[in-house]
Length: 265
Image 1 (cartoon, helix red, strand yellow):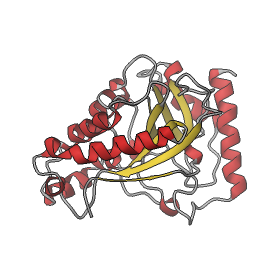
Image 2 (tube, one colour):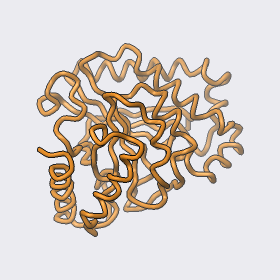
Image 3 (cartoon, rainbow, N blue to C red):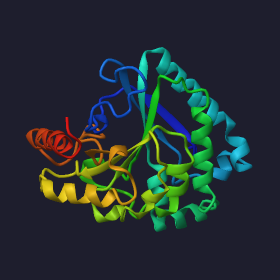
Image 4 (cartoon, rainbow, N blue to C red):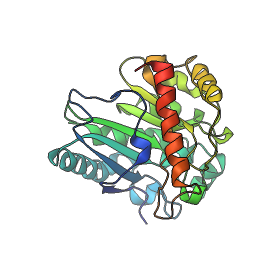
């Protein structure tokens, strides 16, 4: 399996239903424009990055071209909001995964910069009326997970050097660490979506707990640049997560209610 690969598909992604009115509106109504989930992995546990792309950044051109072609195809099909779903950044947050990358011949200290370069290059020429965001996934099969660790190791490159319009970060458990890495998030129009509501169980989080955590995040990111969403989708695979459909809808209703209470209508 190649270390760098992409799979693009139009699919229903509950986690892309962000709470707050059109936070990624690129100039047209995101309610009317088509939305797609663009899923990619930038790491394989079976193959070193150096084996797939000898020379590192210089040899990743084929991946960048493939990304740009796919993004253009989505745009030509009418897509104006594209969400990238990426596991590589979250995997690099995990010390065990960083050690594993060494055994494959990679230098983990160099990988965040390589990932950022490929992402920036993939977004070159992005139309002005198209918004592209990224969800950093820690694994979501049948309510399980595959990576843990705070965002400190990747935050500077991920948040400050990728030219995305927004970021979905999972923050539903202690596995994600604290909000301190968000200090690398740039001021301006970009949006940061806090995945504070877990999609892995049906337990409804206390509203006051969510509000408190949003308040904690504002120490590093302005409130008007923050959004709220589930930590991931409720069914990243056909098996779904371990919760009932009515529990899913209860969580989504709560997110909408919280958004109105925190940011207003």
